[in-house]
Amino acid sequence: MTARLLEGKVFAAKIREEAGKKAAEIKEKYGVTPGLAVIIVGENPASQVYVRNKHKACTELGFYSEGVEMPENTTREELLAEISRLNNDPKIHGILVQLPLPKALQPYESEVLEAIDPLKDVDGFHPVNVGRLVTGQKALVPCTPHGCIRMLELADIPMEGAKAVVIGRSNIVGKPMLHLLLGRNATVTICHSRTKNLAEVVKDADIVVAAVGKPRFVTADMIKPGATVIDVGINRIAPKKLVGDVDFEAVKEVAGAITPVPGGVGLLTIAMLMQNTVDAAELQLSK
Image (cartoon, rainbow, N blue to C red; front, side, top):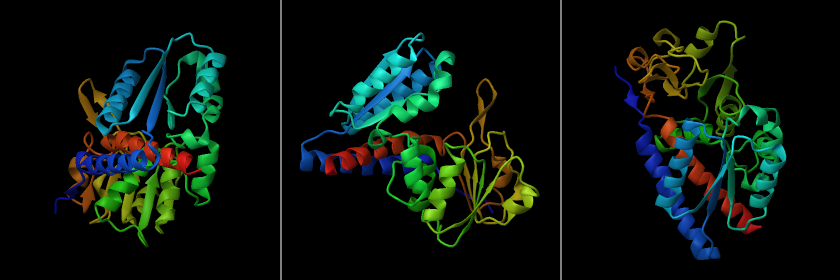
């Protein structure tokens, strides 16, 4: 048996289409175009690529897009002042600070993220949004785990009553994924580096989400036949070779459905950022 391939581009296109329709509805109802501001500090080449892709997605969907480029030697005070300006700009409904920050600013990362208005926090990292997610309230949710959930929904893969295992407990993927799956009435186990008998725990799962940052960590003998495997990992093992946290070639012969790397979950992240931007616009305008 070869698993059904869950290709990110198919689901990302659907999510973007939904975001575009919602943006049009907001414009018709309120006379407002959803706006996203992305702050980038320094000249990290990978970050610059991400920022360009975000701007391109905004343009394609008719959003207002503002890129704020700040020099490497930007101070904490200057960065916080820029966030404050965007918090008070009615054209901007979503604010994203591109990570990682330059080394001198990294000690202030939490302070920087918490300075963003929770209603404009399209990354879903603000403690207010984290608290809302944990308590089952409407929240802006981190884009990658939110994209995984939308993929499962759009692929008609049942979550209610399913046994789900999340491998990895990061604040960006693992922990929000746990709460999003709980919100869909799955029974969820979260595994990490201290989990005993990890392979046995994973083998019991109907849905496996791998977000551990280790190349090909999840092997075929860890997967229940027919299980759905969502691979969030992106690991560079050679200059032009990317692999996920799942041993794709072996696992696809056991799983019922699987995401590839590249070409899987990564393509959903920017699509969900667009969705979060229209959701943030609607939240602000409805108040």
